[in-house]
Length: 121
Image (cartoon, rainbow, N blue to C red):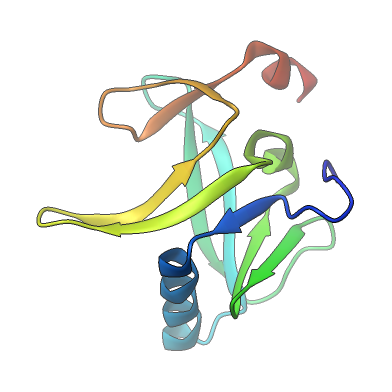
């Protein structure tokens, strides 16, 4: 919907793609749907859910066997984002490197987008 021809809406690091493939295989799911919702101290939060089938308006990104569906409302907010999967001594999880984020809370769970993006939605 908000894409540039020949450019994927989001990219995944090899670690993220491998983790998504593991999650798809372990649950027999078609992929993960990523999106954003209102919440958190900075105003918005990322969402991730298992899906068995893409919705007709989802942007589908496939890379190294991993499949991510981007919810229509989130497409403009996530365009250009790199998804990574990091493991540390205390936690592991997906990390979003999003060029559209202008601010984030201290813990990194909540984000804020440029006001012009929010006004378009």
